[in-house]
Length: 181
Image (cartoon, rainbow, N blue to C red; front, side, top):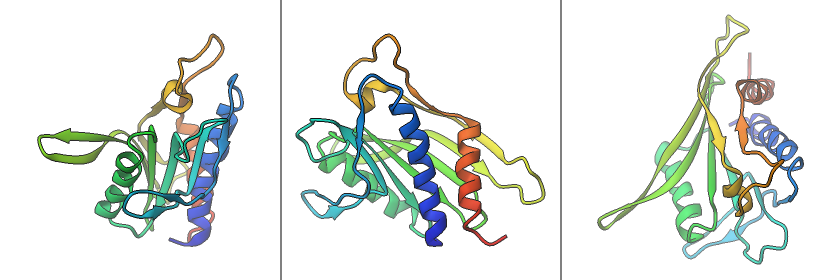
């Protein structure tokens, strides 16, 4: 992925997420791209946040942006975060960007069936770039519960994080600025 488009994707999401979490009574600490040691390997997310004062080195929410990585590689990264953290990581979002500028954001969960452990997306939001039009096609939604980020119920004036169509368009415009026309 052109480096600038990759950075624009997760940093624009980070700006949107930070704007939301700063309006809550509690704060999350940005971890940036801190390297985390798991059982089998080290991994560095593109963006991550954890609760202030929490002893764990694991974030509660993180973002992995991808360009050239295959779906299976992306799934292995998600599996690392959810399984090796023993699910201390509550929210893993992936942002898959295509050379044409389409963006898919997915939220993943860990599933266990019989002897098998795997990950699957539970929410998907997609933006398809229409080069001849100012209006991209947006499908799906992204709603992250407050409790999944802060590990406590929300209070009276606190809200869940909702990525709107306008938010996704803002991310897309940042990504497109780093791609060839």
